[in-house]
Image 1 (cartoon, rainbow, N blue to C red):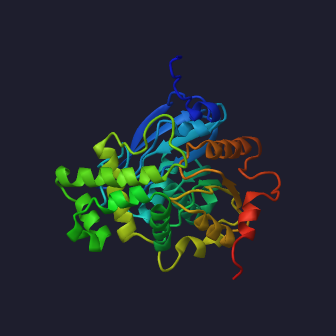
Image 2: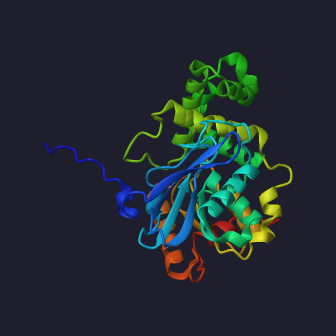
Image 3: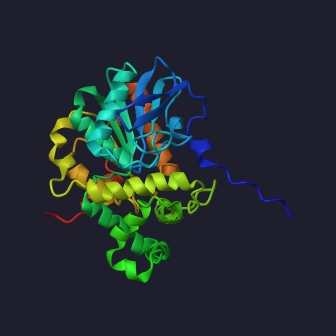
Amino acid sequence: MADAQPSKDPKDEFLYPASEKNGEGTLKLDGIHTMHYEEFGNPQGIPIVYLHGGPGAGHGDHFHRYFDPKVFRVIIYDQRGAGLSTPAAETRDNTPDLLVEDLHKLKNHLGIDKWHVYGGSWGSTLALLYGEEHPESTLSLTLRGIFLMRKMDIEMFYDAAELFRPEEAKRIAEFLPENERSDFFENFYKRLMSDDPAISFPAAQAWARFENVCCYLQQPPDGDPRIVESNQDALNVARIEAHYFRNCLFDPDDRILKNIDRIRHIPTIMVQGLYDIVCPPQIAYDLKQAFPEAHLQLTVSGHAAIEPEIMKALVAATNRIRETGSPLPKAEAPGPAAAFKAQQPKP
């Protein structure tokens, strides 16, 4: 019997090869926070910035691989409290508006006039907010797994999880003792905010496991998504996400959609998994309805940026930026996006 062959990593098939960073640095943001950032690719190339998700997830080792390293100057950084930015998991002075201004400070610090902006999940939220606040600095928006930071977006996630990942929804519901479940989110939040690692770390691992499992249509070949190796990484994302979901939602003003006129002229593509549980396609459709100038590309995938169809779509978008300065296809033809739109009930 032949030995089992290791599964091929799809990142090696669809993304550019890994490369060494050109440099890294820190940027003091205020009396509490210091940002960590890194650069890859061509130092004289087309500037593009990668906005990670979460909020609080931090950068990944493969993030620079969505871009042609001969052409792009790729900037990757960790938002407040995330990744290598300090202090870790810090929620003080951590709001969407401050993250927008941090991004603008980084642009100016690096001597960049205008740049392309790329973001997935929470990163799509931040990219839209940045574009609306600084349209003069935004050359294009490449978005994946759309999230608009509304209460209804959070509710859609948990409703979808109960339907499509019932075992994981049950597992996280049962993490809390029965007497704490009536106010589940508030009691979970208290555990995540605890100064005692014996309380906060298990809660963070449970939160991260639940979210990670929901990210994938199929389990990736390079590891079990239920495992978050670092307690600190789990705490960064769980604590900051809980802080944002509790304190920073955009209801009732639906801020991003209200201000969409500010970015109608900016070439924008949305790459959205049809089977995305974390950010269900309805959110992307809501954005498309308000922003018909944007291109919506639906893929047979879940939420994760490393699912094959999503990787192909994102690399194709950045290659179009390389060739034409815009992530948009030359012409929109009828396809899954049009079919999805046609299925929606008429108002």
